[in-house]
Structure formats: C-alpha cells, structure tokens
Amino acid sequence: MFDLDGVVYVSGHALDGVPERLERVRAAGVHLAFVTNNASRTPEQVAQHLEELGVRAEAKDVVTSAQAAARLLVERFGAGARILMLGGEGLRSALEAEGLVPLEEPDDVVALASGYGPDVRWRDIMRAATLVRDGLPYVASNTDHTIPTSYGLAPGHGVLVGTISGFAGVEPVVAGKPARPLMEETIRRVGGSRPLMVGDRLDTDIEGAHAVGVDSLLVMTGVTHLVDLVAAGPHLRPTYVAADMEGLFEAHPAPAWAEAAATLGGWRAIVEEGRLHVEGSGSSSDWWRVVAVAAWRHLDDAGQPVDIEGLSPPVASEAAARG
Image 1 (tube, rainbow, N blue to C red):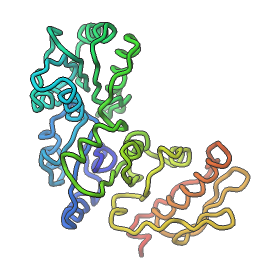
Image 2: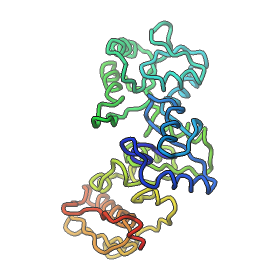
Image 3: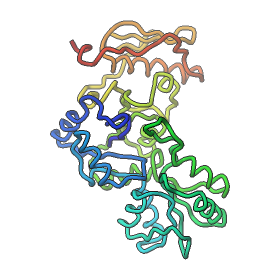
Image 4: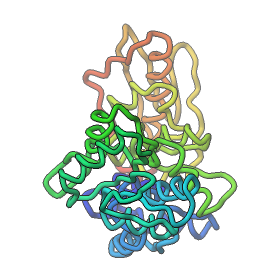
C-alpha cells in the first residue's frame, strides 16, 4: 500500500527509480495499491496521473479517502440514501459508485459527507455546520490540515473539518489515514495476506498502519525529517525504515544494542549527555536505522527527544554506499 506524495512522486514528478521499483514489486507477484487521503480526484484521474509519470496503474489500484467515506455511509444508511455533499468530483463519484445520492441542497438528507474541493462555497459550509450542530451525522474524508500546491503548502480539508466540528461541537467520523476505514477499504479492495504500508508521514501513513495492525515501511523521501523521527512515540514508529523505496528489496536487520550504542552496517549511534552522536560509514538506510534505535531508546527512558544539534543525514546515494 503506497502513499503517493513523498513516496511515488514529489511536486508532480516521479521520484528517481520509483517506476522501475514498482515494476519489480509487481514482478514478484505482489498486489499494489496506491492509497491517498486526497478526496478531490477520482481513482481514474489518479491512475491517469501515475501513468503520465511512468507508473503503471489502473483505477482499481487506487483507493481514496472518498471511497472509504462512501463505504462508511452505505454501510450505515444503505444504497439510495441521500447525502449532503461538500467536496469535489472525487467525492461525488465515490458516493455514486456506492449507490448513494449526493446532493448540494439539504432536502431529506441523512448525513453530511465532506472532502477537499476548491470550489466549495462558504454559504454551503455555514449551512452544513448548522445541520451538524442540530444532529445531522457527519463523515469527513480526512483531516489533513495542509495540501501541497504549485505555490506551496495551503490549507487542507482538515481546516474545513475543524471549522464545522468546532462550530457544531461534534467530532466527525473520519475515513482517511490515520483512521482505520481507508486502510481497511484498501485491504478489502486489493487483497493480500500480509499488507505493508509504505509512506513518508508518521502521523498518517505510519500511525494508520498501527491502527489496523499491519507492518509499515517509512521512506525518507518526503516530509519526515530527522527531528520528526527522533521524536516519534511508539504509535508513530514504523516497522522498517529506509532511505528510499529500494528498502523494499533489502533485508532489514535490527541494529545491535550493546554498551548503550546501536550498531549496524558500519554505523554506530550513541547518546551522551542527551546528545546523539553517529560515527562510521555505510549505507544511508543503515544510518537511519541506528539513529532511530538510539533516539527511541533515549526518548522512552528520558521522556524527551534527543538533542540532534550538528547531526546531518548522509547525502551519498545508495549506489555509492553499496560500492
């Protein structure tokens, strides 16, 4: 199960080597799913975008938070239920695919569904918030507070959700990561006996994997940085960590722990007087692994993140690290 932004592509461009690596995964007989909290695009649109980037994908390979929200609604209210909708084409398509009736007017509706949509009007938000305050059930596709745009990070759907729930005094049922429904919907649609979530965000991808009890691989190609990793509590810690998606094809030995130091593949990480020190050489993935083990042991023992002042991840490529 692959997150998209920061894992497959960044700023609309495929990460180096990712299309080829995904083909290697397919060749091994593994089911692939592309999982996104973005509810504005349909699976067909997401698949088309991936194809344009050189990533082979079909609509059936894509699972969105809008689809997970639609599943929640149809399970509760049944096909044919009238749903007040705040969102874009992706949400409308998902609701219709489940036999629900998305409406923009609140006539005889049984619930509100919301997802990111750049054309959602303020007057519609006000009306929906009033209905939720008065008891209308509310399902939100996701609560992401930011969304990447061509002009930088912008307010995401979570800002709208906060507006409605803050006014109404009601917390919505959330479909997207890190909540369970999107992960469960992905496993249901795509199948597989040992799901693995591959992501770049601790608070959505990795926490979402914990929520449904599946393994996770954190790749350091997106938004998670050193300061985030060393401060991660147990519910945010991945099963595996790698510099990039090449980690799918590597063994992941656990760093050895002895004399208050983590060692692996030529690297040694130790915390002295609250500061993390790393020495040695080797692959960048092994660097991240020893750092994680040493930092998390310190966090669990001391109750506060380790000092990383002056510490920088290796910048050498994996190919160079392998010789």
